Image (cartoon, rainbow, N blue to C red; front, side, top):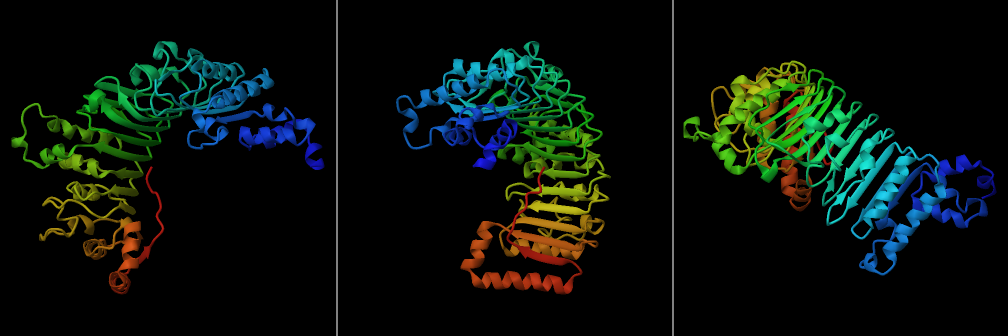
Length: 471
């Protein structure tokens, strides 16, 4: 204790900054010198669930929330006008919105650069307008289960130093189109919008500075397919996009893009219509516009790593004839589903002339006559044709269930991929449980893996560990 007490105050404050604010406050009983020192740390992290001890019913007891709010008031009052670097606050319904806004304004006035707010108020919550004109904010994270409302939209927003914006809410975070809002962040590099919906049927994500973009959307309001979504992001390096399929993607400017994950969501009914002949579709059917997805794919043609969802593959089956060539693509990831087909896989693989690594999350799909030359589902003379010209060297399969059908597909890859040198197969939890409960199945599968290694030049391994390869 004597050694610690001899340290300078600024060093002690730095040490306290690695503790939660509640843990740091407990140090005040150890020494008179430390009585209020905890309050001068440059990073503050308040969490009402931690402070209150999340016991059943405790939150509703008289005075409990008042105690938490009083604690935050005292810490901020002790700090006075000292500079603060990071402020994290997590609170739920019951905390006074007026006091909450006062806390936020307090740290904004003291030059906070990193602000992380997780606010779950059932009646909604309007952020203070001072937040949207800060000249010191560099990182801003807003999360809410029930929705946080942006104050005034584009006209009342200008954050000249902001580099990272993370918004996760059950609705769009302001009543302004993204096209109008993004110019308010001239230095923005990382943008993540989760659980959002487009304000209008058409919108444009336009920024010259963004290098990483993640959008998890739910279409336009009422879960309708957006009319058109454009991306004018020439500096973008990493792109994650999940959304209901738009009818058009008129502009996709991503010439420097290296990695992309694309999830284009379709309903089961839309999938049925995608697989139907075009002459069976009625005029005005939104599915007739899904071929415009090729414009999005054309904008991604320079990527080195691409991950596609099972729904995305169904949509791409409409535009196989116009699929771009991905000359730079080295890694291709496929998430499969038993109700989604692989009709686009043959042309996709043929259009990746320098592909080295093929990753599958699951090895199941809906059987159609259009996936026959990629898989072994349907006998045809040109079976395996899309594989024989592929330069793939490594395959990784996650979510392996231990079925004979999966083993036949693995055998098919070994037979037709001429450059394949390594195959790692990771079992899912159900597959592992099945192995433990069915020794005969385990012996059969392990025997087949051993045989694969004997008759092919590929090193095949069956493992239990899983690795997340997605963007």
